[in-house]
Structure formats: structure tokens, C-alpha cells
Length: 459
Image (cartoon, rainbow, N blue to C red; front, side, top):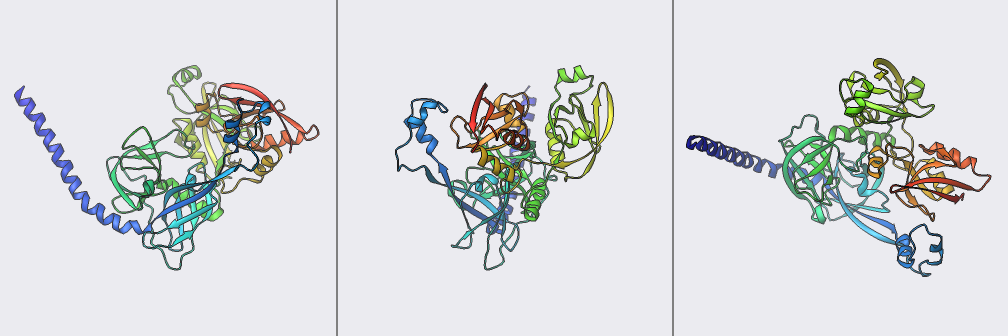
């Protein structure tokens, strides 16, 4: 027993000694890396206008939002309806002529964006070249009188859990803060993230204000863009992988939008009971819940109840993988799929369309803008993660992201318009057009577990 204890103690001290030596060796290298990389890291400050009229109405009225009596409880005339909101974030320069990468949420809806550099007291006004909500990435541009220091992208595929990384950013407004840690895990999916991102997890300290800053490997190359934290946890931060980010950034620079492949299906994971019922030997694949008529999957003969097992020879383990794979392909690409139908595998070729809806572009689509004008609300298709969070079985309907109409609020999901299912902006536009003669449209709304109807006039 004594001998066993001594062995365990020896192993423990060897482990401690190894980590001390590893940390000591990394220390000087981190200092050199930070000194070299920091000039290319920028601080971003934004000014946004926040609509406070809804909050004021709730303050003055004793009735719940949407109640018809609320019209008698309006804020006093002359009270401010909007206020300025200031926020901070980070970014990094990728070209000497002033292109900067940051997060979409750092600059979304900003009326003014100011960028400051480490070696200059001057603030630069930034232009948004393109912004992609789905991956939370944005590309900015500033005009400088000189060539600017830059950072180079590295490969997130090559980085391994346990390797050292360094984060540089603007946490809580503390300019050019350097933190270090390791890659804790790869391929993480978190809460409200879009369907196209697998995150790197790191224990390098990341806080509010770090968003958009670089996560660097020990060669000083960007292998991730810091984007999210877990407020309840310590040492848990997430970064967008560089391999995925580079594709998005290059598209934003070239097209000012991200052009993604589109199948036209709603999908879900295959659980144990579903696999058993369908005769599958493993819980793998993406189960097709519905197929949109006239879209690429429908044209290729894919049906509700099919399970997509492979795309171009790559195995699909879960629904999220299919979304990422298809979204990473270009519209017009021909893909070979292996599907499972009625106990047999079947080969299908699909020509991808282009993802619509305006959620992946730098500006609202014309269709979004027209619907906002006609209805007084801003809409986009519901995402699978949001559907699960709202308690819906599948991602069906249109999410209200902004409303100027009494009785409708942000977070509502419109599932039908005049009795017709609406899963896309084009379907809603058709319903609005059909209702023009009446001057009013009846919406079937899902709100926090409840279904209700709301008739709104067409503007």
C-alpha cells in the first residue's frame, strides 16, 4: 500500500513539474507573440439607436402587450422614443489597405462605427462591407494614410485540444488585453448559434468586449475569432474556426453577401426509436421532415421521411452536419446523395439552389424590406435551434425580429397567413398579395407555447 502511494505521489509531482516547465517555455514565446500581433488588433466602438417606445408603453399601461386598451395608455407627447446605446468590441486587420474582421453582433444595426489602433490616437470611421448573421462574422473597411499591420489566418483544422492559444482584445473596454490558455475542445455547438458553425472551445479568458478579436496559435496566426462566452462558467469561451471564417470573409469581400447552397428541406436528428422504426442499424443521418415544393430537393425526388445518409461520399451523422455541408457549397453545385427509403439505400443527385430569406446578406433583401413596409414587421425563416428553444417540433414558420404593429412582438412565430402555411418570405409575400383586396391579413401566431390569431391591416 505504501509503495503504491509513493508511486502515485511521484506521478503527481512529475505531472506538476511537466506543466510548470511547459508553462515556463510558453511564457517568453507568448510575450513575443503578443508584442508582434497586438498592433494588428483593433478596438471597435459603436453607437446604436434603441427603440424605447415599447418599454414606455409597458410602463404606462396596466394591460399586457397586445391588449386593445393599450392605445389609451401612450407615453406623454414629447417623451423620447429612442435612445443612443454605446457598445465595445474587438477586431483584427487582415490587409494593409484596412480590411478588418469582427463579429456581426458587434456592428449589427450600428449607426456609427469607430475603430482605434494600438499605435495611433486617431479614430477611424469604418464602413461595413458585409455582415453574415448566420456565422456571426462581419467585414469592415477603414481608410488609413499608411499601410497597416496585419494578421494572417492559420488552419483551425490542424489545431488540437491541449495546444496553447492566445486571445487579444478589448474586454470591458480594457484596450489590447492579452490572455492565454489552451484549446479545450473542437466541434462545439452552442445555444443560439447559427446552423453553420462548429466552435473551438478555449480556456483562454474571454469576456464582453473580446468579441471579434483573434484567437492565435503559437505561430501568431489566427485560428479562431472570439465570439461567445458562457456567463455561468469560468474558463469557457468559444471562437469561430478560421477555416470556416476565411470562406465567409472572402465572399463578403467579393459579393458583400454569403452565397450558400440550398436544398429546401426541414430536417431533424435520427434518435434511437426513429432508427429502429425506419430499420436503420445506427442512429445516423438527417431525417427529412418536410420538402418545400419546387425547391431543389423536391425536383430531385427527395421525400418527407427519407433519411440523408451521405453527401458526396461524406457520412452525415446528425442534421447539423448536413446544414453545414450544404451551406458550404455554392449554389448550382451538383451533389450526390445517399438516402434511406423504405428499408433500402438510394442514390440521388441534387442541383443546389441559393439560400433565400435575406438572413445571410449584408443588407435586408428587397423582399424583406417590402414585407416590412406592407406589414410593419421584419421577418426571417425560423432556425432549427430557435425552434427547439421555443418548444416547436420542427423549424417551420417565420420569426418576427422587429415589430411596429400592436399585437405582434419580437419572438413571435407566424406559422400561417390567411390559412396558408408560410415557411419562406416568398410564401408570405404571396399571402400578402392575395389579401390586398381585403386590406387586412389574418395571421396564425405561435407565442411561448400558445397559438393565437391576429388580424393586421396592410400598410
